[in-house]
Amino acid sequence: MTATASLALRTKLTPTTTVLRAATAALWRPEGLRRRYLRYLAAMHPLVRASVPLLERAAERCAGLDDPGARSLAAYYTRHAEEERDHDTWLLEDLAAAGAGPAAVPHPVVVELAGAQYYRIEHEHPVTLLGYMAVLEGNAPGPRLADRLAEATGLPGGAFRTVREHAELDGGHLDELHRVLDELAPAPARQTAVSVSALHTANLLTRLFLSLAADPGGHP
Image (cartoon, rainbow, N blue to C red; front, side, top):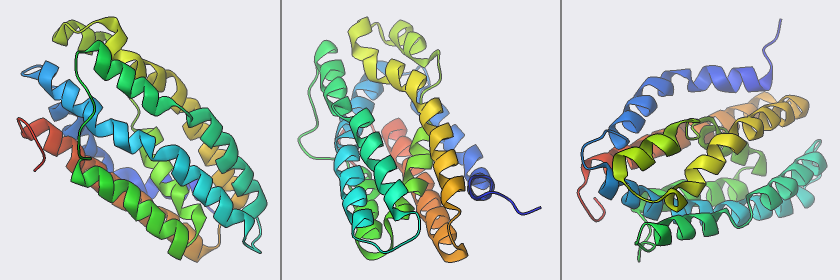
């Protein structure tokens, strides 16, 4: 029996799971968590801010392709862009509730994460964005994380909207992404491109979390 496209992607990502979970655990360890959480919010704001423009550009590229499945993929990206719209504002509100503000300069790894997708959308194929999305949606905050962070940091409840909302939303988003990928059933070369995008994203996300976990302030 031939594996579905989504199962093939999940299988490719399996070796990244342990190291990414370890990086996440280091990020959320109790010692110094208040300051580290603020740095996490400041790092995530520009990453989330890039989400809607990436999705919109991917949809535009799909619309210009004479490619089986491009129309349905464009519709999915357009729909998902509307679902993600203004989520960067949540992060600004979280930062304000915590008495902090956005970073003056994006974290370098955040620039790599978003920038790699712009390259792939423009110079490979917009389907590669699914790999990026699969990693981000697949590593959403756990359902109890917001409460645990609030208790450990002493910050007000209004500082945790993004964590709380994405814990509820992203599981359903990932299921939908897998359905879209399976319906597209990309040709082997395109499936490989999606997997490479996902593996690159997992590596960069691990680097970002380890940097935030280790560095007491500023960028590496």
